[in-house]
Length: 363
Image (cartoon, rainbow, N blue to C red; front, side, top):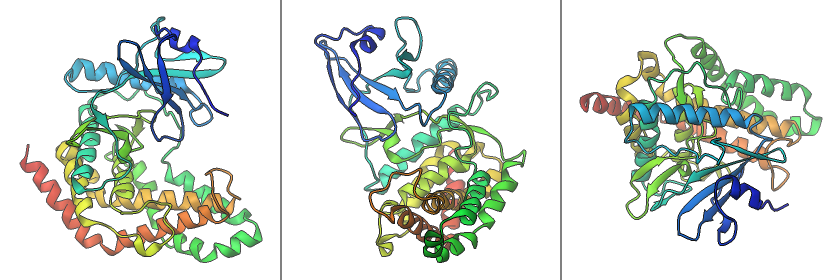
């Protein structure tokens, strides 16, 4: 069913409905997003938050507001997309149990759905690194989890084992070889369990969804402007943000690709994103964080792979599918990507060392 914002919603943000243009906007699949253009030409982005995914939208609003206030005080020149308050001074407007928010439209900005050249990977990674660096000193005490256990590999691995035990005979048999292959990489889950309890592997305020289309780029030059889509801004580990970039930037095809021969690790893109990210956050990393930079890619690719396979074994109850073996093929895709990453480990670790050295020299 098509969702259209009611006039009451616009009025809540002090916008008169008559003469205001509204159209669907962006390529996101979670929230309903609209571009609002007033008669005077000013534009805003209006979103209906998907409460089925984000069970407590108030946490999203509170996290963003605390981050915005901190940045305004300590780094006033930084472009952070701050919600437009309602006429009542709230960051959210609630109508019939639906949560709406409005943010400014950043003029001259564009997004890309994939990195077409290494420079785009650099710019996007640098923006995520800059946000993490500028928020480094913030007190995490009052921040909540907008999606609890979102990147908790321990939980995802336990769900994977549960799915193996309870899968129907046909799906269990079809996925047997793929399941065994993922189980052979269970040391990744063991490493994560050790890291998450290490006090030196610190919590930071992380974005948690660092796909390249969550960075606004300058139209024409593709220079990074700022980070957007801050719904999952919450405490986490550096491997979440860095790992998601490795998973989605370095391969020329997405998780939807069924031809595994096309799944490769592009070393120049890997270097670009590491260089961009570490140019900002590198000098502030702890020793154990620096040691786990390669693990970040293993962590995120493995977790996404077993999530796809778990869903397949459970009968496709979470991820939308377009054909019967969709989740099976997504899992196979991610396993292949993990294997390609493993094959290039010595080269990629060398790239990390090079980028870390460069970041230290740039201080």
